[in-house]
Length: 207
Length: 245
Image (cartoon, rainbow over all chains, first blue to last red; front, side, top):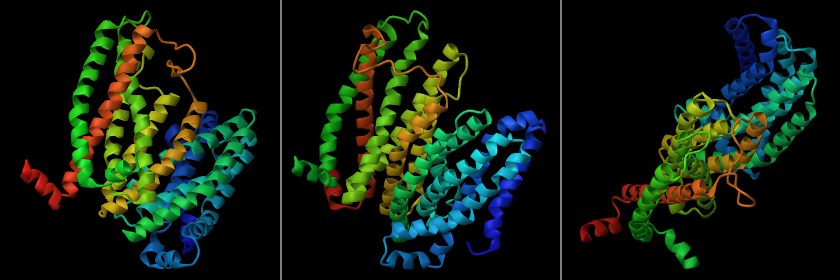
């Protein structure tokens, strides 16, 4: 995260891919509204995939990652700090602006708040898993496609809980239980995934 | 017991031991597969609703069961390799991934072939089918990550981290996909209580599951031996072994 473009690009990507869906599926508002929860969530997942590819790349190239690894703190803690900063600039912002895109896709008003909350919680998981993928592939040339193979399967539960929560809210059901599951997943990931990221970074630095 | 485990970590000793094991296990596997296949395909009675098409479960179910177990073998080997840095654990993990991927693919393909006459469609986005597909992706991820690294020690450690994270995630994936949608029938074999499948069909199925476990073990061992021969092609013990025979 060095320039404003790094912050703006994922949001632009999100916006542009959202635009593609009415063009591809036709502008019928009723149909768009039924598809909106899934579309918004899938595009958010793709946006996080796109940005996580570069998460540790610049630190790795200029050697600051090695300095962080030598620092007297566990690498997992440093990684968590870095991922948190990354999340604030990407996932957090994306979640904040998501209701606007929800409105554009005709998502009923009852679903907007749930969309915001589910993305706030879900992007925590998406960013952490993406960071793990980035840490595993940072030392590999042409790691981009590999990264998506590694992290898409791990993101399946997040996607399911997130979209189901929004759909439940739209149908007037009870999204809280799904949001609670997402929250549990996010908290669990914050505890466990940084350890794996730390181990993966050490592997990448050693190889 | 402990000396046995220590010995397993030594490539020359493992090479000799696995050679003996394969020599015994291979004929047993072939026999079990043949008996199970003949029993299941020819002797077991046809299903009163599905007719003969149900017989594909004698391939489908064992492949699916062992594909799942294979992931745990791989992840366990990964944990051993991360904690104790045992080279043989790396080799085990590396050898288990492609075998598991192929078994998962077999389960998916046979499931599709069975689904066409039974459900009227090749593919449905059903919970268990989807989670098997995700399992296939997880396997392929480990295989691809291993191939991407040039340094094989680092590759093994990276794959160990990935497979351990995958192992933590698998129950969550299964549960989430389960809540998402389900058309697949629930498990018919239960260890406690009455099985929903008649014993005349159950016994050949259990036999085939055992046969597939043996097949997995034999393939894993052969894979590991091939890997050992390749990585130790310059070592003295291997040259001695080849020269001596």
